[in-house]
Structures are given as structure tokens and as C-alpha cells.
Image 1: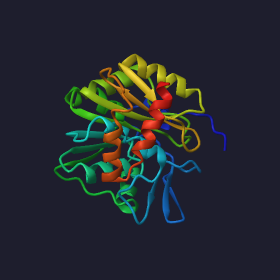
Image 2: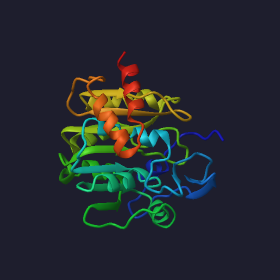
Image 3: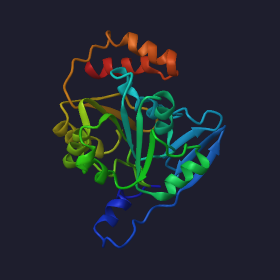
Length: 261
């Protein structure tokens, strides 16, 4: 079960461009009405409640929507790392005015999201693209275009994001507009956590981490422009989110309050 953390994608990046990246096998499991995505191990890479395909089933995925506390009508939301498409589907459904982009390197993940996780086809608002997340964020055409960026980039070992350098996070920040917010899934019980926080603080004006959930997942919120985080003032917005979407936004406020104490 203990596997040395090494990104398959990163390992392959140093090889000739003519070689395709080698990916871990995409596998599935089901329990109590929930379908889970794995990359050939028991680590869960995403989940979908079969009767609620547009709902982000996992608590950390719900926390990834915490940027909604500051932006209720985004024009463009992007997701790096498709997983089961949970966040992509949720944004596509709940923000009908928004452009929704998902970036995924592994074509098998994209295929299985269509066949087993009810990902809608691309249309005028939804764009699921097969490409490297680093290529997406470093493309000048994408800079300054996003209101929200959600980053969930894990390989088969699931021990930390596969892209974690200051250069990567600077490029993520460049993709956001001045009021843009990034949320990212980190692994709190691993040395990668401190490394990622340090790199993010180098690239973003302000970074706050929510309390750990599941088996080590920690969602961090990174603001391109520093702002006053008034938890009490956000209470009405949180209540609105709960009423409109059923997401546990009030618990996000409690987490923010604890992080800022």
C-alpha cells in the first residue's frame, strides 16, 4: 500500500515528445449507491452518487466550491484535473451564465467520465480538453480570463499534487482576473503540504486553508488580490448558498474562522 510518491506524468515528461505519457489504469468501484474512481489503487480519485450525478459527493469537493462565498455569478470557471467530473458538472448546472472549462491529461479519464459519470458533451458553455494542466496555465491566451480556478491534480499514489512549483502557481494566478480565486486540494498529512503552501504564498497575495477532511484532504483558498475576510459579513452569502445549492457553506465559514483565529 505504501508507494513512493512519484508522478507518472512527471516521469514521462522528460522522455521524447513522440512517446505518449504512461498512465495508471483507470478502475471503478461501487458501494452503497456511490461510484468511485481509482487509478489502479484503493485511493479514491473521485466519487458520484449514482442517483445524484451532478452533486459533489465528497466533502473536500464541496469545499472546493468555497470561492462561491465571494462570487455568486462567475463568467468563467476552470478545473485542472477532471476526476469524476463532479466539480465540472456542478458548475455547469448551477452557473448557466458561465463558461466552464475542464483540463485533463489522461484520455481514459475523460472517456470514463462520459460513459460512467454522466459528464455532458461539450457545447457552447462546456469545454473539456485533453491537455497538460501546465500547458493550459502557461498559455497567454488563458491569462486574466478566469473568475475561479479549481485545482485537483493527483496521480495514482494520491499523496500530493503532481504540479507544485512556484512557477506553476504563478501561472495559475496569471490565469485569474484581479478578483479571481483558486481552490486546491492538498494532502495535509504529507510533506508536500508545506511545500505547496510555500509555493502558493509566493504566487498569491493571500492563502487560507480550511480544516482537514476525509483522510488528509485539505482545501486551500488562494486569492490573487488580498482582501479582508469578514466571516460575519459572509454569513448571508453562506445562507444563500445553502438554500440554493444545499452545499454546506456555513461549515466553510466555521473553517475560515478557525483558520483566521
